[in-house]
Length: 458
Image (cartoon, rainbow, N blue to C red; front, side, top):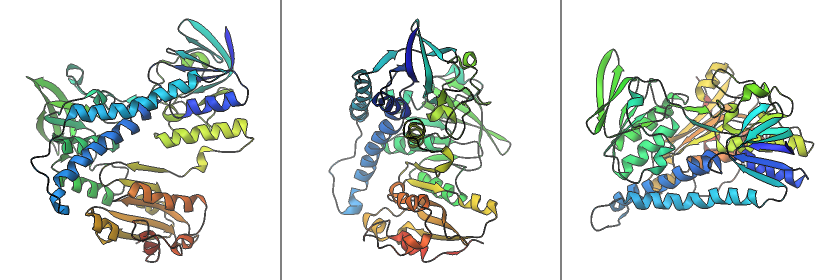
């Protein structure tokens, strides 16, 4: 038995940072990684997809050059091998940097292999048994594959295998009209693929307000993406060199035939082969490790962080998990998951930045509220840049005057929401921002303007 003070399983956003803090506190730490250092964000999530989004945006903007008085000779061509090479060149330093930093960290031993619990404080990896009083699970998640008849008989793609694509799919069919699916849909349409999105729910990104969903659907369709909502996939089959997807909608059957298929209907935690039952660690019906407000599992001395705990599916929530655990263990702090405010973004173009409650959630709560909206075509910075799609919306509690939530679908929407988020964390009344002087010309300068035009939520 090789004993340590702490074992960290997985090297996503939480694990490496916590390992460094633990080593700095004088603890002997073991870090176990079975595949790629850096987790989903670095390898198959944020970093590579945003690199691809940037290439797609450049192609889109180049085609619009004449709108800005710029002439480009000849048709715009996209070299997918070069696009992938650029993406890979951005990913590699991040992944290698995480691994190098851990292997060079004095007091930390890195084990490359698959970890499995053999008892509540014991883990086996590569034939070695490791023990520690504290164990931190940071194993992330992967694409969920639905039991669709015939799916196992065709070559389909996931967000992970899409990272290996260095060619242009003539017709990409995407199962799932949520965040991952829509980013790939717009990206590959701009690269030049024909794209069809098939979504089971009555509208895209169903967790968002209807006006947001409809606006996103509108600009995707304007770019030539075939959006099919309220559509159930009942079968998949190979037809020659193509893939046929059978769809049921409004009681009628139809078929979509494409060359490639991307499955993007959700995520599942990487917890099914960790031997959690050997340690008595509880999971829910979906396999997520159950944790309390301090990210402790039901087994004393074991924590779960990141996507595998079901308390957030983002890089920033995973990083915040690290901060919560580190503060409570090492800084005599008192931080809780329930302290954080929901915040995330959809990285289409334009992006959606979301914080706090949706309008539907505010209405359901029954609390008296105020609301203000503005179309991006009325925002001078957006108008000047020729990027006027979308709108901004903000909701305020009528009595407390605190901001309840906001949606910024438009130019820089993923950045603009942070000024709102900070005021929410400060628990300050909206009037603080209403009286703030913002810089002109920016998108953010219209937030105080909106707050001066609040109306009762009817």
